[in-house]
Length: 98
Image 1 (tube, rainbow, N blue to C red):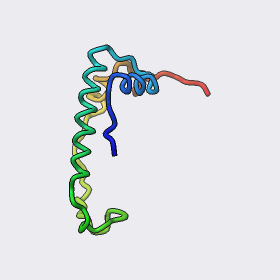
Image 2 (image 1 turned 90 degrees about the vertical axis):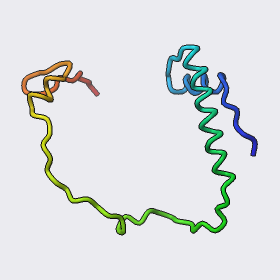
Image 3 (image 1 turned 180 degrees about the horizontal axis):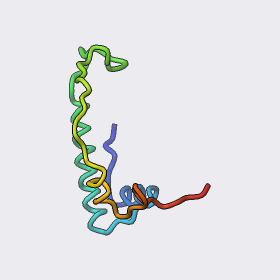
C-alpha cells in the first residue's frame, strides 16, 4: 500500500475542515510531524503478527482495580480563586439559549 503523502495541501485541507487558522510555520510543522507519525505507524506493518492471538476486547474482569479512596481536594475558595469570573457561590459561565 502506498504511503499517504502528508504535505502542506493535506494539512491546509484538514485545517479548513476543522475551521482552524494556521500560520505558514504551523502548516509546515504539522506536515512534518504528521509525516513522522505516519512513518512510525508504517513500522507496525513490518511486524510479524501471524502468531499473535486475536482479541475482540479487553477483559476488564481480570484487570486489577485500585481501591477508591477519598483524597483531599481544593477548597471551595481555592477553586473559585482561579476562576476568570465568579457569580454568587460558583463559577460564572456564558448563557446560551436554545
